[in-house]
Length: 296
Image (cartoon, rainbow, N blue to C red):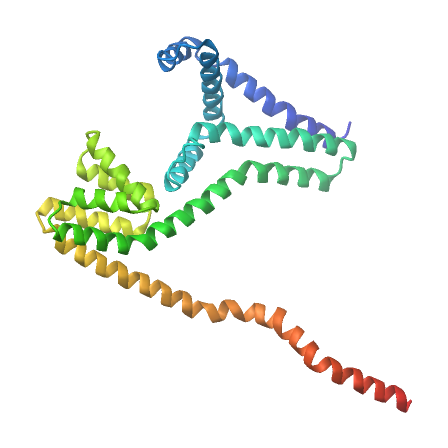
């Protein structure tokens, strides 16, 4: 057998062996205790088996994933708002499962016609499938951050009106969160829930800024924390922050408007102008060619 065949066999044997070793080396006694605590309130035995199997898969996925990479994925999910349908444990199981399934299917095609280019393409496809959830989560998280950045000035105006009407800062935040529909309203409601659960106001505000990871929101949280520490009037802070956020939003819109001609230049040169030249000069070129053909 040549080296390509041995490399292909190694690509399928080594991941399977690693997964089997990680599954065998699990602490059975500690796992049994945790499993019993997790399913103590569930009476159905089929549910117990489903919970235990899911916990085993999540534990296996966390053991196969480097810790730094898992923390980075957790940060991405926090930016996305931690969707209920895709927790970190399920994501750590889904990524290697998709890559392994793609690798097995691709290996069947590679063994039929082994080649160096086919092996490179095989590795590239497996890597792409493994990192595809990261790309999707990163894109959706970036869109969510832009939505928070856009909603922040209007939300601060609503909170300013509520504070000037006599509500406290938490009451204004609750009113803005209940009346809003975007991700910023959800984050504010979650911050209030953290404070109701016993978290201090400063820790809840800082956790809000860390979850969203938006620079404007981080600046607002820093101003609120300083105002709370030094006893500054919240209404003045909200008024100043709302004015600054509106100025920043207008500046970003002007910056995008200034970039628009540069972005339109290349599609105009390579897509629109050639077609326009063909439409305008095409008949004239045809007439000239017909006249020259008649002369000769």
